[in-house]
Image (cartoon, rainbow, N blue to C red; front, side, top):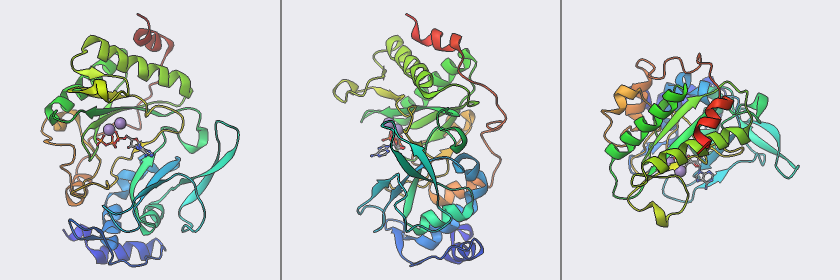
Length: 307
Ligand code: ATP
Ligand code: MN
Ligand code: MN
């Protein structure tokens, strides 16, 4: 589509003052999408995407030879990146300090694409207080053989449990196999309590419907079930950013949808770059995401952890 052409990508890079090298290099061989076209995609969705991505620690999936070749996760700024990729010093669990990447504008998204980032993964907290998460995520991971209808049902089950506790949530179609149910939080409660809440909620669902859900990592016990991966809710854990491209077959995107729209989604990877850019030009399905003030209270924690 017009939105995703190389010319638009190069113009966006010029405007953002990021130098693109090899703009014509193919990054998605299956689709023939070039680096400049991927830049055009990010320029098209930046306004929607940046509120979720800006000013928080990132983990980047880089594929210097394009998708399907060697890719690696990079958390730490080792230098040599364009200026629009900024760094933040974070104290690790062992007391050492490490530089993490963050961005705060379209130039950052373009700079990452210039550095062959195909996936943008986010911490659950923002730079200004990395100890207090401002969202929780239930990452629904279906076992082989389960269909997207099962994923949808799991997502709405999680939504209903969260609703009953007083927490509003939103579905992100991952671009892979599952859905992430995301609840924004006012950063008030620290990681350990937030993780305990998420673990308790996932375990509660697995206890209630043991034939459908599992809340432990064990691959062996996962047969025919949906794993409710609550482990995204730990200090330092990451999850795919809304609107990020994925390094998967078909060049899919992780797209935010409304609960109503989710019922019509056929698969977690149905949104191509062009389809996602189209979605970004329509009404925002995550209305109120940034206006909601909610956090995990002691009674909520008690409700999911007590027997
Ligand atoms: P799917 O819907 O196919 O499960 P997903 O994005 O949820 O897609 P998962 O494998 O469930 O993929 O992983 C969840 C998140 O865990 C990822 O989005 C990523 O942020 C993080 N993650 C997974 N593997 C790694 C890794 N090797 N290094 C860093 N982070 C990782
Ligand atoms: Mn997943
Ligand atoms: Mn997972």
